[in-house]
Image (cartoon, rainbow over all chains, first blue to last red; front, side, top):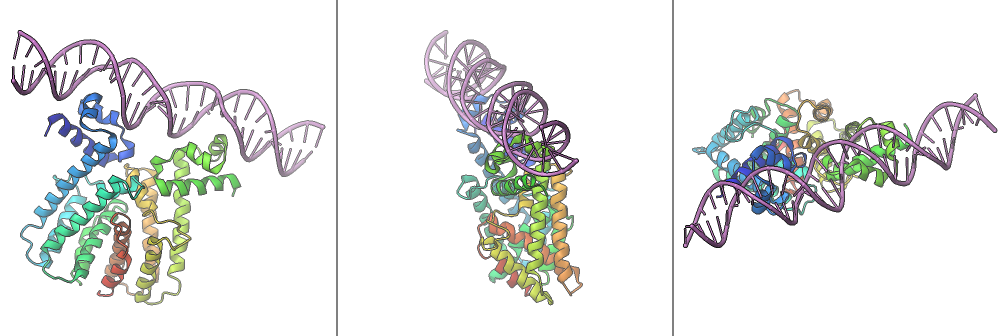
Length: 180
Length: 180
DNA sequence: ACAAAAGGAGACCAACTTGTCTACCATAAA
DNA sequence: TTTATGGTAGACAAGTTGGTCTCCTTTTGT
């Protein structure tokens, strides 16, 4: 992987996630990364291509993080506990792999890109599907209801933590899911 | 309420919700509404003021809609059923009060405005709190866990419906909540 | 050493952004 | 009729946007 290309993606991801894709222009990315505009366009054909690269990188990081969090979870109780404890850590900025919590980059990006047929929307949807699959792999109970519950509550917890500033969204989910 | 002011808010809300606040400039709002720029700035001191007015209007509509949906719900089972059936209708564009489903305007706006201290973020948080309170008013079970579960799942269902395109997010929530 | 590739600084471009202001028109009230 | 209020079309301004391009330097490969 080319060093300049990687630097651009890293910078773009940081800035896009922290501020919003439409709130950061490419000139800001150039300024922060120290890369020339010509170099940017030699690596990416457009801003959107850079956005997609940033989304892909974030996706990889998130799936890696999630996989680590669910490692060794051999009962459904452990899956739930490890997953939501991990999320709680993310919400409080203590998961260094994920950095400062600013909601979910994929939810945020879907909000900013209204066309459901766009590559961005499609990628965000794919990401959510993959997350669901990773969780499913660790569940022993084959009842789809449990996976649905976990999946939906995970999304709800992210929004509660970000929009409502709810510090205990994740632990509430644990309490609820233990009731099932 | 002044006719032109209302027209501007209506137009802004439609366009902002459908496309994103940062994707619609005031010139587009003027074009669609047929109002002059000077008139816009005589009623609103800035674009952000117009944004806040649009958020407030959406909030009023949503609370009114939710109140209607929960009318007559005198058991917790009914609350759950009526709430999530209403949401399902929204997700499939059949709730005319709410219009075309494009996720949650408040989640979307929070995504676009990254500063947690902004008036926009504060209003979105307030909205979520009010929604929670309306739901709470109808619940007879005083266990906070039920309210938490409903509240978080409602948020999760919105994201699942919008980002993941999950047509049955709302009915999944009903199934899960009936297990509690 | 030479050539090709990669990269830099930054000018240039057309379009767009938010907000201010001019000159004028229409309507309502006194 | 006159005055006050509300509104219109659109010019103006400074700045930003994403993208193209020129001239030059640095790095890499042969």
